[in-house]
Amino acid sequence: MAELTTLARPYAKAAFEYAQAHQQLAAWSAMLGLAAAVSQDDTMQQVLKAPRLTSAEKANTFVEVVGDKFDAQVGNFIHVLSENGRLVLLPEIVELFELYKAEQEKSVDVEVTSAFALSDEQQDKLAKVLSARLSREVRLHAAEDASLIGGVVIRAGDLVIDGSVRGKLAKLAEALKS
Image (cartoon, rainbow, N blue to C red):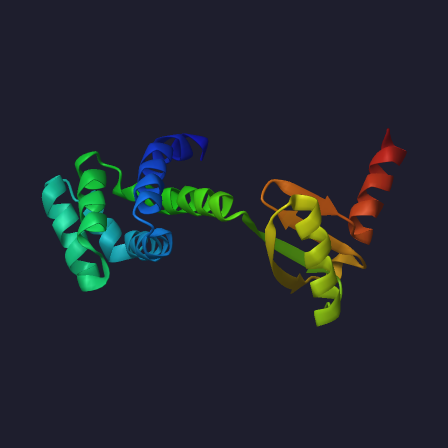
């Protein structure tokens, strides 16, 4: 996984810098998301792996599939990826592009998993506290997992805050073993 990210990084950075310079972050985000979805299709995977097709033919097929949903610059980007044999990296490129975009916009997606459903008031309060702690606009996504027994697990990028009863019991068990 780290190798794919390393290969995808220069392409994601170039796409981000172009989109930012032309004030098209949202449009590029949408088009790259579509490109990543298309690249994951089973039929498209066969096309991308076909040894008899040239890189230009692969890129042209890819662009034809999405039709007019790409602008000329994204079409050129697809051709560059194809020439370098990197079309299979599109999901990683999109992931990195979205990270750059979130950093630029000073926003973060936060996943909150709780044992019980959180009320709207609790979600708003949690979003405000996390926004202050992370110094970013927080987009909260709540989910339920009864196996947590109680409490919450918060994931914001690399940060994980485990305030669940299950997590505390696991720490206690580990402490007792040592």
